[in-house]
Length: 318
Image 1 (cartoon, rainbow, N blue to C red):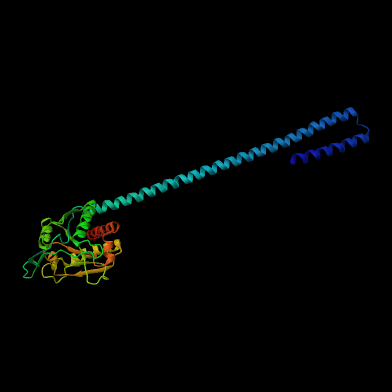
Image 2 (tube, rainbow, N blue to C red; image 1 turned 45 degrees about the horizontal axis):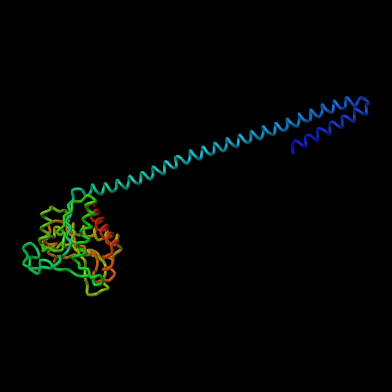
C-alpha cells in the first residue's frame, strides 16, 4: 500500500509539469514521450527503491525477531539447565541424607546386644521356681499363655512370629540379636530366659507378649517394667521404664494401637531375674476381636515390628 500511494503522487506531479510545458509551447510529442519515458523510469526506480527499502526493513525486522528468539531460547535453556541441575543436586542431597541417617542408625546399633524373648511355649510347665533371687515365693516355670478368641491363634505362636520378624529387622539395622527360643517345642523357664540374656551380655531384653481379659471390649497395648521399690532389681527400674516407654510409644505410633502406658510390675519372674534393662511388651488383647484380627494381619505385623525396632533405636539414641 505504501508503494502505490507514492507512485500516484509522483504521477500527479509529472502530469502537472506536462501541462505547464504545453501551455508555454515548449512541449513536443517526441520530447514529451522521452520525458514521459524518463519520468516513468524515474517513477519505477523510486518504486523499486521503496520496495527495496521495505524489503530491507522487513529483513531487518525478521533478523531482529530471529535474534531475539534465539537469545530468548538461549536464556531459557540457560535458566532451565541450572534448575535441572539444582533439582538433581537436591534429589542427590536428599538421598544422601537418607543414606546418612540409615548409616547413623546402624552405627548407633553396632555393639549393642539385644535379647528377644518370645513369651510362652507350646506347653506350659507348672513346676515351681523362685520368683526372684533369694525369694521364698515360688511360681510356675512357664505358662501356656492366652489365645485369640477370633482367630484361634495361640499367644506362643504370635509372640514367636513377631519375635523372629523383629530379630531380622534389628539385625538389618546393625544390632546383634539373640532369641531365647526359635521354635515352639521347648521347655525354657522364665528364670532361665533371664539367665540366658545375662550369659549373652545383653544390653537390653525385650519380652514379647499379648494380653487377655474377661472383657472383650478391653483393647490396647501396654508395657511392664519394675518399680523403684522392686526387691530384686530396683537398680534397673529407671532404665527399664525408659526402655518400656520408648518401645511402647514407637509401637503405638506405628500401629495406631491404643496406648495404655507403662505399668510397674514386681511379680514377673522373667523381670526379677534380669541383670540389664528389661521390658515386657503386651502387644494387644487377643480377647478383643479388633486387636486379635489386626495382630494376625501381615501388613499390620510389619508395622508392629517397625514400631518396636524404632523404639529400640530411640532408647539407645537418648
